[in-house]
Length: 623
Image (cartoon, rainbow, N blue to C red; front, side, top):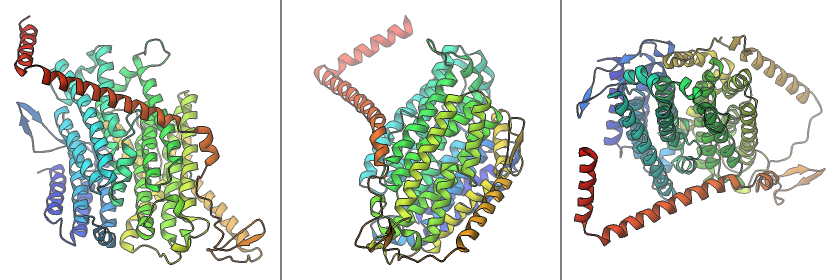
């Protein structure tokens, strides 16, 4: 038994134990312990995080004379680290007092733990896939496991889950068609056979394969125009489930795209193929898809008044940054794209758990019904503050490092318009996360929240650990860049020369250790000047002070409703309306075809269809 087999066995045992013990009160803590065991098993997998050799599973299966195999390389290990880490944090958060309240409101905390465990196991199977057939099996298992986590809350989550599975099924058919075409061209599902023969494929076949796989995997990523399902499906899941889904679920699409399109088919082929009647290559077109994926969902997040939906929309946009960096394909860009997978996961998990903590105490995620919670939930405020700084890409948090690498790579490669697009996306992120923290924690406290207190330590602990990860990997990004470089090596793309503090190369230097020390030095000087001045008169948080006048709690001064109303007036909602119109048009066309087919079927005798099918088959095979 290899270490990969041990990891998969631990993961399968977690599924079985959490499934059999779904009604036990302690099942949350048992599941958390078993996730911790998986995490330890991953850390001892032969140094894969530092460029170790790939590990093959001793288990293999044969289906219809086709072998299925599993193996782990440094890229698989990197994504598995994020997967199990996110599951561990979410499981601990959901194991204690949160579970009691969830159960009190007719929730099923044991089923939530089982759903997270099932998602982790299926994701590990996908990450360990050793051929196209096992990749497709893992892909489908991940899709259905995700559905369970999305719909278990009931209500509107079921509708979003149904929308998701329609998109996922269409994406799976595109992936299956691509795999079928590869089998037609190579006679094999083997990764090695595809890598060895891809150079001989015609440009037409490369375009078809690329579009099929990018569309299929792009559905899971939420790339435009396949993004309308994701925000609602992730936001309406139970809080810890949203944290797990938001952190890693959609990145399975990025992983599959990295393996099939970048590693096996080769990005060089995409660069060489020119799109007719344009100055763009196929790679350039995909980069602009990534750019629009950054901008439109990010500014859609601005319009959200539900904190969970705001974060979920950002998840779509941040995936555009990851794809953008990887498609640049120089050491800076690909490292930035891969690093952003880790950085975003740590930020998003922390933010979703922080919002879940707010919902736990206030019973609402409506930003128009919150405010002033900083003195009531100070540690949750710190977690949210650290998370939004990281998500916005501002130093000293880790999100700044990955975005800086992407920005710098676009400048080095001479892509100024794409650089501007990424900066516009960052501006939208800053505006929306400011709305998030302002409307939740700052300003005047609401009367109904006067006696609210901080959440218990079973919920605070994973949040604070995630916030610490966000800061420490921003302060010393080299800790994660070691894993990123190993993933680059596994993909066969140029590797980034790096230091503990960041990057030292001819294309740009970044030392986060010095940047962080200078920032904290500036904060220290500012604090010294502030606290050494005249003493200010304190105003109770239920009251306020503005324009030289004291305002009592009877005067609602906290501005939250219609936040950024002026900006919304200018940007409007035309972009989201466009995609909704497109989606409704497709639904109408499919419904029309379905109805027509149904009427045709009932109008003729079934034997007539059988005769037509037999005649066409004979013509095809005999003729």
